[in-house]
Image 1: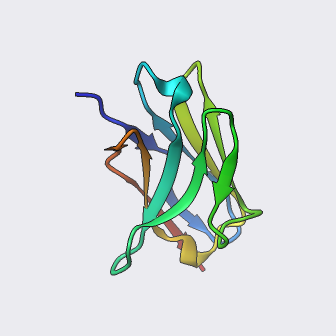
Image 2: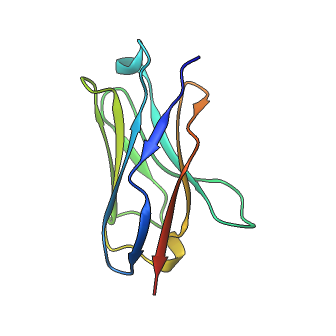
Length: 111
């Protein structure tokens, strides 16, 4: 069974940067949309960013201008570059593609 594996989370101070990576070893990666979601304690899971097979990306308003989603078709990874992090970005971040989900990686931003 294919599993997605996220990495790159951690504890940082406000204003810092983190880069999350999601390995998606599926044969149809090149034609698959990939997305990052996040869920804070007591909150619903929300869409953060999404990237299509041609590279077109969309973002939640709360992260526009700070986060950048990208894809590497050779490595079969979806990455999320997060800059100017804020305490409200604290959450567990999940990647998803083709109805598959990773286990999540924790991002904690201290003020």
